[in-house]
Image 1 (cartoon, rainbow, N blue to C red):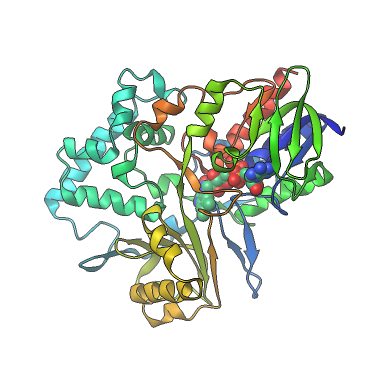
Image 2 (cartoon, rainbow, N blue to C red):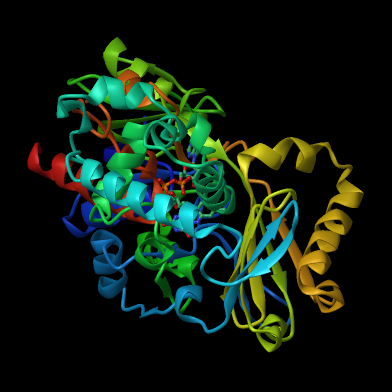
Length: 439
Ligand SMILES: Cc1cc2nc3c(=O)[nH]c(=O)nc-3n(C[C@H](O)[C@H](O)[C@H](O)COP(=O)(O)OP(=O)(O)OC[C@H]3O[C@@H](n4cnc5c(N)ncnc54)[C@H](O)[C@@H]3O)c2cc1C
């Protein structure tokens, strides 16, 4: 039987970050990857005119220190994003379109309520330790509440709830009615407890050579240490030796296993030799599910109308858009409109979405050179998008979240506070350090 020191499952940012550090430390590491490519939820393609188009994870925030450190080590460059482009946001609501960075459709009283509740949210989130939310004295109570329940209890008006829901639609995360308050507080605590999700904080930097280039650079250096088109079907863990069985039946041995697989596909892998409590915790975790579009134009035509390309949309299949790069719009189909998206016959989806774009920006929006749709929600090797936490989930997953059971190590964005590329790199490198520390 083929044997290695460590087998890493999954060649996304987490698995690659872990394998890279293990490899650099002289460990004999093998990465098993289900797909025929590296990168997982970061993926890019080249449009016919040569521009790179990101179909998955794209943007980070300055506080994403693990990701930024890795980017620097790989010799790549960080630059600005849509948050620093000029122009204003477009709000597409049931009653009409509004242009303006401040939600002009809210009354002064609504905005005052929003600001007051955001300050309360910031104060409360500062009391949650992102690494140990379970230690909060009110953890269970905060976890049982939805973010919407809490906003209502603070005197949030319907317009305040609507503004928050619009933001979550654009982000394609769980709607606030089914989002654990504790999870939301934990997420914003990790970002510095400044208030509600702020695009300027979470989304102000990107890798200019292409976000997926981060993964591709690591994969290139690992070379034949990655085996592609090799889905793991079963894992056995033991102090006296672990092994992985591939879908083909082949068995490969190792002293330790690092799982860097998203929580959806992980449920399909038969894992033995790991405690029931850990498996229950891993299997409880879930994703918010989404699809992404990327539309390529000759230029950023929306700027001529004073728009920055950012939209927040209420009644459409698309939840929101932003300018990925010059002339390229990215958009997300949020969990709440996936039903309509998938129920639309395949040959009509693009037409429907194009009509939405034209409704937002006018006829020029129909004049694109490429239209990409990437269905992450149903991709068998992702089955989602980013970590989703419904009321009660933080408690049910419990403090085993993001921890290891040597020689079984767990990493991946799902094992951090709330997903994201930062979570993947941070937990991947931490898993490698844990393997090396216990070797
Ligand atoms: C549309 C979209 C937009 C996003 N936007 C952003 C963003 O702007 N900023 C941000 O920070 N984050 C964003 N994210 C999230 C971010 O991309 C992910 O959190 C991160 O890339 C996940 O990395 P990972 O290594 O944990 O998991 P993945 O990238 O999912 O990697 C897991 C790997 O495991 C493989 N695998 C699965 N099953 C098996 C198996 N049985 N055997 C072997 N291999 C298997 C998969 O093929 C995959 O390669 C976005 C995600 C999506 C989908």
